[in-house]
Amino acid sequence: MKPALHKHILRRKIRDRFAKTLSAAAVGFALFWLSWILWVTLAHGLTALKPELLTHMTPPPGEEGGLANALFGSLTMSFLAIVMAVPIGIAAGTYLAETAQWRALRESVRFVNDILLSAPSIIIGLFVYTLLVRPFSHFSGWAGAVALALIALPVVVRTTDEMLRLVPAAMREAALSLGIPQWKVTTHVLYRAALPGIITGIMLALARISGETAPLLFTALNNQYWSTDLGAPLASVPVVIFQYAMSPYEEWHALAWAGAFAITLLVLVLSLIARSVVAKRRISHE
Amino acid sequence: MDARADRFFRRCVAGAAIFVLVALALIGASMIWGGRAAFETFGWHFLVSTEWDAVNKDFGALVPIYGTLVTAAIAMLIAVPVSFGIAFFLTEVAPQWLRTPIAAAVELLAGVPSIIYGMWGLFVFVPFMADNALPWINDNLGSLPGVGALFQGPPLGIGMLSAGIVLSIMIIPFISSIMRDVFLSVPRGLKESAYALGATTFEVVWDVVLPYTRTAVVGGIFLGLGRALGETMAVTFVLGNAHQLSASLLMPGNSIAATIANEFTEADSDLYLSSLIALGFLLFVVTFVVLLIARLMLRGVARKEGQR
Image (tube, rainbow over all chains, first blue to last red; front, side):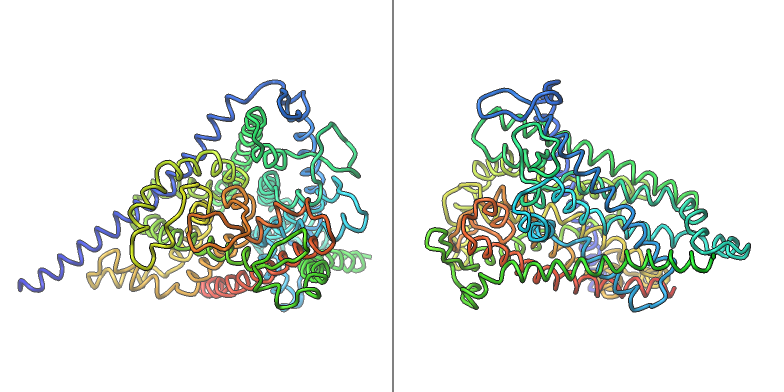
């Protein structure tokens, strides 16, 4: 081999090796931040974890307290949001996968849904503010739930659409050829087949909304006290974290870390379960 | 009977789908409506004025617009090459058994709520930057000709650079997972023929895979940009919420989303409130356009994949 050619090959090999090393470094970079963030949340959260978290209200500065009202508010609003988003989301997903007759409408709904999926959540908060808070001139738990529902909706639509399209066509044809009307085929056969996937979508939506802060700032606002009134301002864990972390008080910081730990744990567990369901599904299809 | 029930069922699901369309239109309309007082009062001046004076009711959007663009630009500068590296590693370099766990771990980064990034940023990352990174940057980069002004300033920790770095960590999982998916959509034969010609792994990805998937890769980058522009809580914590225009990346600033989050409940006049909603409208328009481009470019891949 000519020496010049040999040099050329060597240079290409070095470049290849260099690129591979850099790519491994990029993965290390991402994993480094992930483990740093998780470690800090775990370390601070565990030390702040106390039984009073579940029984005491969010305290005024300088006093001990818990997150009971915030946890209640978060659970209530997330629950209501899911209850609102799931039926509409599943119906819209069903339209996209099953009954859409105009291609243009189907494609534009898919498109708009994808845009809603990544739209900044603060915009959704402002929208619900002008829709539900300003006309009634007070912040409310209902407004917060509606904002969260609008964030959960596109997730449910998308997963329902995708999961229904994964159901083999033979199943539809078999049921329809028995003379069963389409709505019964969809509700009795297709939903049953796609159920694990749809539940995955609901869990991903729940994981997404349980950490959302920005849209709640202008809708549910916050409440220092125990309140079950959905027509009034309602506390939530993310907003309490925001407020307490920004404050100068040590006790508040500890509570904020406890809340952060609880939310991170919940979100990670939810998304891990959702992922494992999807993974199992993929295997069973192969 | 069955036919009627079927028609009813179809109308119900079509109604839900149209609801999705209407929701987006309503969001845009409500922003224009809410921000109309600000647009009427300030006109085009709103976009170029650096004034943000609640007492004299004079509002301009240039500082938050500038902060949004600069932090997003820093985030993209870091996130794009790193995401490419991750996608490259996950599709060509890593041994099979390592691919799934690493992909899952990187995607966990995407699942962490943004308020957690904000808290970590404020209590851990900002002090780290202030104590360790910024003095070094000040000493070594601040004296460079031309770009030096970008890196001069007191080591506060809070500021554009910190916010940009936190943002980049948040968008890396989105960009890298899209890049990985589109790299995997490249036909095997295409890559194999390049390997057969004696190309190295890097050459296959750089000269064959990347040109083949260019539109989708750009789409993924735009999707990440959309996230970076609209991200609120993490930026609110580390950006500093200061209405001042500064050449240095080490100085605190403001972004559209952070301004809205910080000041919305303090807005004491209608014009103040309207100005904040007008800011929201600007953010809506910009992210809408960016996401539109992203989705249009990504759609090409889905179609290509569908044909195979």
